[in-house]
Image (cartoon, rainbow, N blue to C red; front, side, top):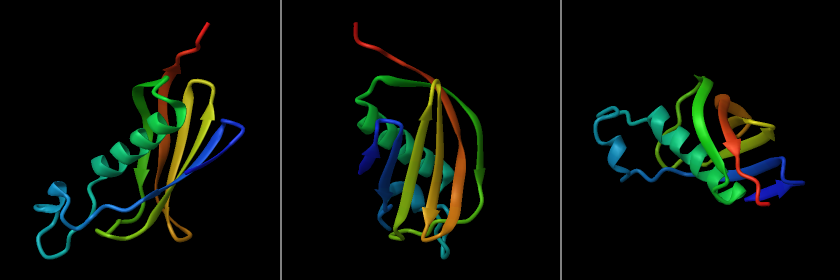
Length: 108
């Protein structure tokens, strides 16, 4: 994971072939479900921000290309106030992108 000035983050993603969500998605041609990708995005955000960004909603999301089990992908996050923009790449190809809305806790 790499972050710059606490506004951007880059993290890696690799979903193992034995992940339980892949069993029926799809037999003979497994792809990583969008919800697993979104979970990885939120987990990366929580790890980066120390749990002080609380997701309230998914403003929008687009899934543009499939991710196969064991393929390497890169999560890019950008924090813009109460919005967390994300993009997921396999090489240079965009797999998914969107915006999460939330609040960020501040310590007094």
